[in-house]
Each structure stands twice: as C-alpha cells, then as structure tokens.
Image: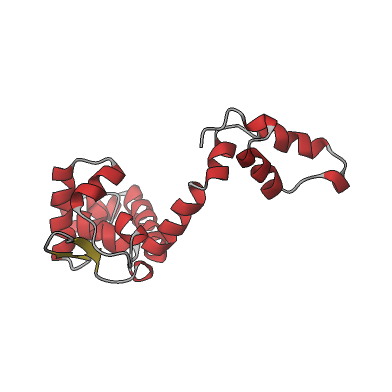
Length: 173
C-alpha cells in the first residue's frame, strides 16, 4: 500500500516502508523477496534506490497480492486441496467454505491497490479523525435539533470541528 501511495514518486527504501507501516525491517525484507520474485515490485540500486511497483496501483488487485504471499486463497485446506480430507464428499461444511472462499476471492479480485489508497486517504482525512474520535458529535447532534432550514451539512459541521469550534477542543489533529 505504501508503494501504491508513493507511485510515480520514485523508489522507496525498505527502511522507510517499514517505519511507515510500523513493521520489522527483517519481516518486510522477506515479503519484498516474494513480491519481487512474483514481479509485483522491482528494486533499483544506488543512493536513491529502493522499491517500486511494476504496474500502476489500479492494475494490481488484492487477490493477486494475497495469493502471492499466501498461496491459493481459501479459508480451509480441503477447499484448496480436496484430496487432503477423506470426508470432503460427505462434509456439509465443505460446500459452505467453498462458497465463502469463492466470494472472498471475488471481492479481493475487485479491489485494487489504488482503491485501497483512496479508502485510506478518506479514512485518514483530518476532519474524519476528529469525528471518529467523538469530537464534533455534539455539534452534529445539535444540528439535528435545528429547524431544517438552519441545519448545517455534515461537511460544514466537520469543517467547523476541524477549524477549532467550541466542540472540537478535544480533537487532536
């Protein structure tokens, strides 16, 4: 996701990626080897080197990333490999797990890294963080008690929260 956010901005070092995602560098190095071998990322050498996506973020879906890192996607082994269980033919849950796995795969296939960057950006807007933390809820609730002609829109309420209105003093940006 960090490489997708940074797409077009040049390579990023694994050290920087690890710091941004708050994950151990050694763990990220292992992931990078797998992603590089699958040609999802590439590396460049030198003082300004690092890692880049090999395709635009809107051309890489989450199923491809998950299956690259974890193998064929399914919630239970017998869906992936029916020969691993002698009760597959008589197991009532096998069909359920197969359906769940297929639907989850369909959803992961429909979401790209670009979609995730957009969702991340939306969820981490400063005015959204204030509202999610409860600051501003009084002003939004107060708006619902106003006569309809005097109500502020959610965006106007959020903007007043972000600007430092009385109800936003607890908001930490």
